[in-house]
Image 1 (tube, protein in one colour):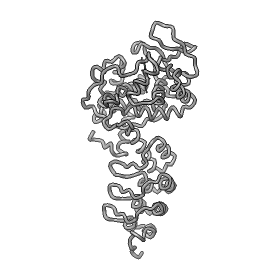
Image 2 (cartoon, rainbow, N blue to C red):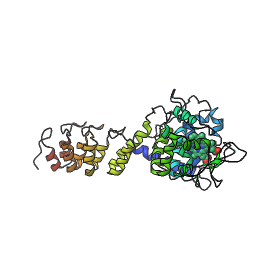
Image 3 (tube, rainbow, N blue to C red):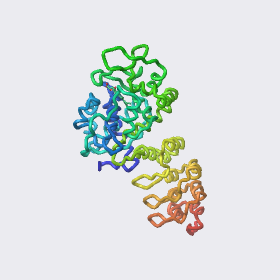
Length: 410
Ligand code: HEM
């Protein structure tokens, strides 16, 4: 992956956008809309994870190999593997594991669902292939779901959120033995799976296949594991919540699915740093654009407000100060208590950045927040000296004083 610098927010997001376009072309076109199945490939690659020994998971794209390749649970999924071969050819430095996982993430968005925080970085290096039988068995109930998803590290609420993936797609008799779709529009990602589950009556379908449930019109389907979300007292509270409030479902699903997709990645302890770093990058990015609403949303999702861009060491505060977003200062400095003295890899504090452009109000806010004006950057300059260099006498005058510089007479 040497061609791309994934540690840089800009080139990483540029690359991800290019990949996303390529994946869109392959998943959604005149021949097919393959979003549901792409989502299932990503889930089945990740759902083999066992937290007790870190085996399985999305790293390694092990579904390419036996016995996982011909696990009955994965029947038909090779269609997506094949569909995505041209993406791999177009981006040879991106691993197949990343392409599968990212396709699942963006498929949700393509179908109208929430954006799913996603980081690249998986590898295709040889990994032990997990044994078959780790994916859930649709003919079982609540305890089985807890056992299987608990092994991956998910709690009750996350199990219900993830099961909402069945708002997309359908069952195929030739693949799983089950038949039919869960919702009226299986290509649209919304909360109709939960509305149907909770508000309709479900009866065992009379047919010659395995036990599954059908609604009074006989057109929709629920599997025994879906019905368990309604009959189990703990699961049903969350299922009701999602039926009543789509935004809660979207937000929970986005986080749980993001966590699912990063299971088994070398650098992914249970706290899901992939998701956290994605939110942190979002926070830094929106700070650069001065969008406080988006910044707040990223914080709510779990962004680390103190995080630093890997290749530059720059924080959100640096970015907001550089671009003169005065309206963000009191929130960042007083509420979030961001450290105004953090130096980026050039040794610049946010004060150096603001001084360069003569952003007077920013400079004043930083000084009030206790920014140390004696700090020197790697060129040996204080913020006041930077202000002088950039011909900003007003700013230099404000900075003059303890740690400041004597100004030349102008
Ligand atoms: C809770 C345990 C789960 C069970 C027992 C289960 C079982 C199944 C079964 C039997 C099918 C039908 C496959 C076919 O015949 O083509 C299916 C389809 C699907 N599942 Fe699940 N699943 C579970 C969880 C999930 C999760 C966590 C997701 C994603 C977050 C998901 C996403 C999908 C999608 C999108 C399809 C439709 C695929 C298509 O249309 O080709 N499932 N699932």
